[in-house]
Length: 88
Image 1: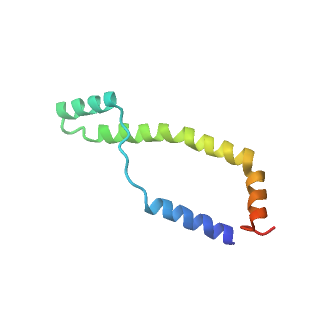
Image 2: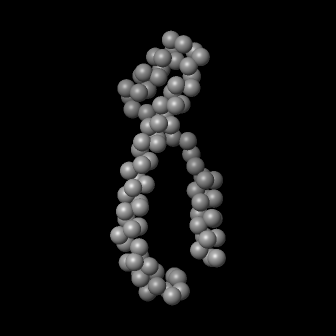
């Protein structure tokens, strides 16, 4: 039960302190600016491209985190047991 509460609190804190990031390269930014100047009704184009870039950048970190957890979960658990952080 403690473990579930820890995860819920951790996720809540992460969601609470999320800051919006603008992840656009120079070329993507130039294209969205020129398209928004040509047609002022297309202001959502830049936001859509920005969300797509953030999504693409997030996937490698997610995969690396999963691989790290998968290969080192027993070592981390043993270390935490030795330190007395978790009970066996």
